[in-house]
Image (cartoon, rainbow, N blue to C red; front, side):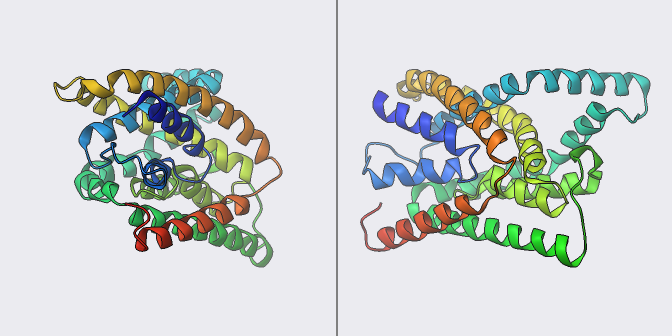
Length: 286
C-alpha cells in the first residue's frame, strides 16, 4: 500500500464511518474501482489497517463527546459503587450503551472468519450497499407510518428500554457485513424506537464508540507482526487523518439531522451499489 492510497482510504473511512454509507463497503469498493491491485483486501494486515482507521474514528468521537463521556463514566462508576440504578440521565444512557454493545460483541466473535471471506470481492459489498440504501428508505417509511397510524411521538434517548437498546445494538451488528452502515442500521432502529433523527444519530455515535475502540485495540497486535511492518507507517498516518475527517463529519451530521432525514444517503447507497454490482459482473471491478 502506498502512502497516497493510505491517505485516500483514511479520509474516506473517516467520513463514511459516520455518514450512513458504510465505511467498510467503500474501503472494498474504492480500491476495486481505482484498480489498486497492489492491495490485497483479503489479507489480515489489510483488515488490521482498516481497524486502525476505525481507532482514529473512535478517538474523534470520544473527543467530540468528551464532556458527555466523562459524565457517563462518572455516573456508571457511581451506580456500581452504590449498587443500584437511579434516575440520573447520564447513568441511564451509560447502561443503555453497555447493554447495546453486547450483541455486536458476541456476533463479532462468532462471525469474524465468515465475514472476512467477503472482503476479497467487490460484488458482495456492492449488493449490501444497495440493501443498505433500501433499509434506510424502509426505515423512514415505517417511522412515518408509526407516527401517523399509531400516533406515536418522539421521545428522548434516555427513555429507551434496555430491550430497545439491545435491538439497536443488534441492528448495529449488521455492519459486520461490508456495505451495511453501522450508523445507518442503528439510526433506523432508533427511529423505529421513537427517537427523532437527532437523537437517533446521537445514540448511534455513542453506541459505536466503545465497539470501534475495542475492536481496534484487539487488532493492533497484527500490525506489529513480522509480516505486517510494511503498513505500520501508513496505518499511523491513516489513523490520524481518519480521526480528523471523523471529527468534522460528526460535527456536520449533528447539525444535519436536526432537520433532515436518511433518504439522501439511501439514494446514494442504492445508486452506487447497483452501479458497482453491474461493473463487477462485467468484470470491470475485481
